[in-house]
Image (cartoon, each protein chain N blue to C red):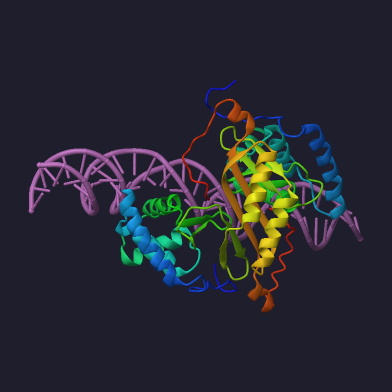
Length: 173
Length: 173
DNA sequence: GCCCTTATTGATACAATATATCATTTCGAT
DNA sequence: ATCGAAATGATATATTGTATCAATAAGGGC
């Protein structure tokens, strides 16, 4: 559908319906736990949900401003911080962007797979990776509490469509 | 950045001697491969070596300027880029900083373990983690070419010294 | 050594990302 | 209705990272 340019695939991510339901649950939970589900926080979630993919803080800001011109970077970052703490939003360090968690029910150490061609992000929760990481930590005497695992490559569909993505990089960080 | 803050442990990392030797090897290799080992690039390596830990680009800049006041951010980033491509320097996304690779002999997908108390960074090359990541990629149809694995926690010595580091974070990105 | 080509640097400007501060507003409980 | 805590708005600024382009330095062939 596009030329060369990676479209973001809205609604590609595990259906929006169930996410919405999950977010309603969140609302209840918020109240129970005494934190507030405010307009701004809601707006950030809606924007991410509508996007269906990752957005940088300032892309998010731009979208929010269409509705409420008073939004500021600080506000966006505060809302994002809030949701990250709640485990509902993930930060992608590789791309300096933010994305909805696909399983906001419970916090978890996850892995993010990023397609460098189409920008799609898939969230995984792979026991094998986590276990290996924890073992590694133990071996080196660490007690770990934060796992940042971002794996970048080319997804199946993109390879099939010949978007080879031969960037010449060696397989290193 | 202030007190309370983790001192960096220079010379804690796998002895500087062997790194120096490795860097000499690099010099030769550079020549062989036709790229240039210039003053600035050398300076960046020396600064990282002297630090014995991670430095942000601007901390690095500050140090370089003590010797040559004409250094600029662009210059520092260019040198860092050069070394990262060569697999000699790693970027820590968690902390926006840069650190010498401990095994610059060959490029490799590695894992970085970061102690949130003392700031120490240990570089690992764990087959288990890599294998699990690759398997995960395959399962999801990805061909991966970049592994970002940064594990944060508290190292043994810090735990022993009671720096518990109870930050209250849940085990999530 | 000298010239030539090309990679690298220096200088400047600027873009993108993120946080600090503080007065004001909102929310929920009393 | 009032109070206190939490969140926001507004503003400013810090931090991190790039773009551009003329000037310079490094290595290869003569």
